[in-house]
Amino acid sequence: MSLEDDLMNMYNEVRNKGLQEKFDKQIAKMLKQDKHKHKTANERWDYALKRIQGWNPNKSEKKL
Image 1 (cartoon, rainbow, N blue to C red):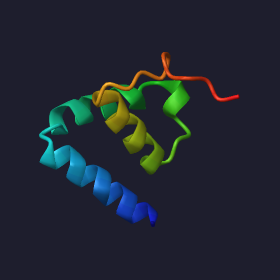
Image 2: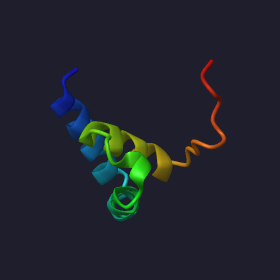
Image 3: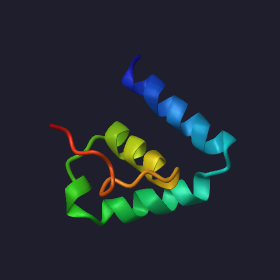
Image 4: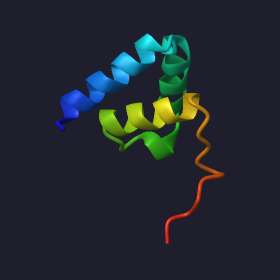
């Protein structure tokens, strides 16, 4: 799947589930944080979508 397809799928999911406002707030918050500065748009969108759906990176399992 291409990067554009991934972005479009995330966009459609946000729109169809009515999460646009939460998504926009999460993206705005991330833009102010240094740890997200060097992420691609796809990585930012994926992270933001996961966050507004309840995923917490601090409580996820650590990779070995």
